[in-house]
Amino acid sequence: MPVIFRWIFSGCISRSLVTLAALLSIYVIIESFDKARYLGHGLNGGLMIEYLLLKIPFMVNEFMPIIVLIGASIYLIELSRNHEMVAIRAAGLGINKLLMPLLTVALLAATLSFIVGEWVTPITNKRLDVIENVHIKQQQSASQGVQWLKDGQRFYRLMPLKEGRFTMVVIETDSEGGWLKRIDAASARFANQQWLLTDVHITTPSPEQGTLHEQVDSLVLNSNVGPETAELPKPRHMEFAELYRYIADLKHAGLTTGTYTYALHRKVSAPLASLLMVILATALCLNTGSRNSRVSWGIIAAISLGLLFYVIGNAGYLLAANEHISPAYAAWLPTLVFGGLGIYLLLKREGH
Image (cartoon, rainbow, N blue to C red; front, side, top):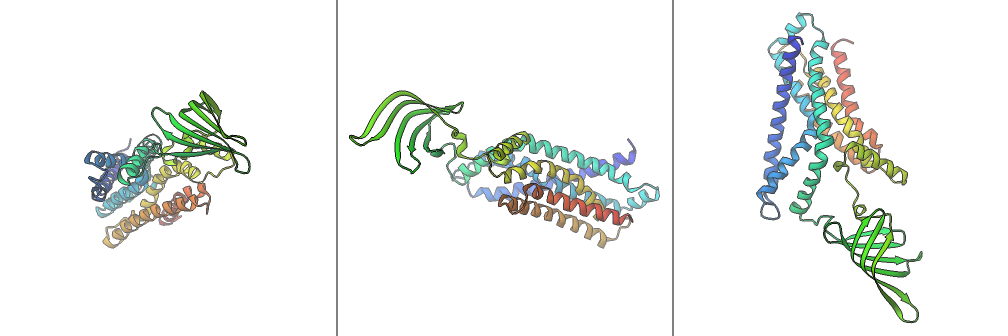
């Protein structure tokens, strides 16, 4: 491995790590002050520390392209200030000798981002949502509250017990909404597309006696809905393969897949953005002189474009969720725009 490759690689990766540490430190300070107002009101010190730690993988995955952009920009500005870019150019080394170590750093960052987004954040996000909704917002967890389900002409009312069991009330109606049967079960469990009921009371209307009552020890109801269908799974809780299968199931059922398709494409487009951000940093901050004005404008432009990248990403998510634009297009839009801009500016700088 050439000496210049190791030198540029180590310099860029060290600045990126410092940038990562700085952003995480700023986040922890801001989030600590924000969540401190909930201490004693559903949130204690242990939960607050857990919340901050669990949020770190999300931050790493979300801001990795911006971290790489700022880290590479800072390092390239240091090279320009110290006239090291002049020496590199004077030695006859082309732009490829500079880009290769930078792209290697970006590739490592992209790999880390993909690993965290695929196998870490789906787990931590589930726990984060519990802390956020139950302990901070004081909302009842969906798995703890009453659930209403509908399956054809049947309406299910579930109240959770323990170990996946529920008390259940089932109302059956005709096509016009008229009452046909009520089933009350002291215990119900869902398995293999069936509700297994025990200690069951059945009430049906009777023209002669008003209502008829029947008690049975057990009853089986075939059903396409179970307790997990009460709340749709969140895309941020799912891995790539889970998202792909779930999108296929939704399409087969004729349902929209907006946010799930967006999340699937983001798992690929977000890590790839780290590679393109290095090209953008090179185009903005690569100078052979040490003029402070040009250097200052380079870092200002890099930070501004990094923030704009994040804003466009959030805007794309909202547009995809409301079905204003294609979810796949919304997921790739920031990466393609900023990647294309970086390549254009670099080629223009190099005279191509």
